[in-house]
Image (cartoon, rainbow, N blue to C red; front, side, top):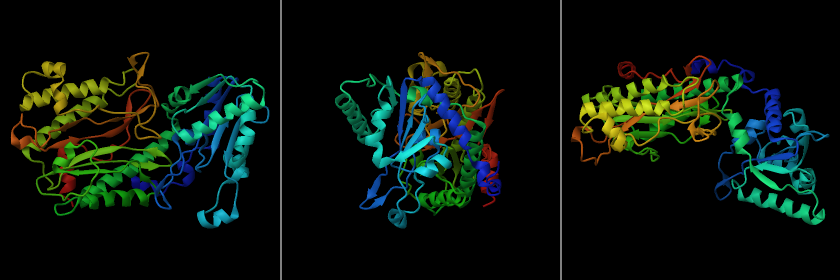
Length: 449
């Protein structure tokens, strides 16, 4: 899907149906068992300064189970409850508050529009929820994530013990992520459609950024172009974009975005879009002048070969870390051939000396979070890839400007190439293929500025 094609899609085409949320909740409750209660709290509003709040973004787990966008809400899943298993506590409609902050969803629409079995005002949760918890054997929750909600939950437990004379109170607190995050690893068709759209928006943003990234401009001007394109498609950045010119690209999580762009330097852009809470994540490294230098091109070709080999490992039945091991091998052999590492690749891998130039892993899960949830190892062994999983593949070479072990001509070069790859039934799908990776294709694109 091209980003230009996204604008022609209706909102319904990029929408997860209420029935899918219902299926997710039912599947989670089956896994938890009928004597359990599952509680998921909304992300709190966070203040930036004084009375200005940060843009609100819902907790990913609550979004996954309900699609409900408002703060001050708690989802309670009560398997087997006669009056409805999915109960939401949320804000009531308040006309005076809505005059200042806009319309709220309210309890009635939580049922009619969001598929809840029942809904109650959040202000009544202390009176209602403890009685729903009573008689359950286990509480599944994210204990330790939000101290305020933890304290409230413990307060409900104390009240139950006191008011019910030591009645049947849950004896176990169980980490909800153990069940829920395994479900989130497997993307549905609707989720993949959203992720393709998110990837297409990010791709268009990268292409636009390449067009404006000329000498004399600043990193923040390129960042502004990325944000312009994302917002023009109704998306937001999935994370603060990294726009790193020259040696700044050797800082893995560079954030300043203030430096000027200079002739002869590379520009590394790591940026992704978030659409309806689903993320994309793309990195490209290209010459500000439009042509790679000899050293830049040599290192770029090594990284590209490593990425292509790693992407080939993204297929059903392969371990998650196979892509990383292949990328390490290709990069280490390339660094040895170019003379940045001494000796042979086997030795450099065994003693870890390659990590001076490739200190990171090669990818991570992708979905509702940029670094999405899900275990990378199961029973001590690398997780096997399966259809519906989505990963990033992002090898890189980073030669710090002060690296005295290499000739000066190599110093200060940082290169990362990153794409989003979905595991399919027979192989993989690169969701971010719209942005060229081949060095000649990139140079041709840049010469058209």
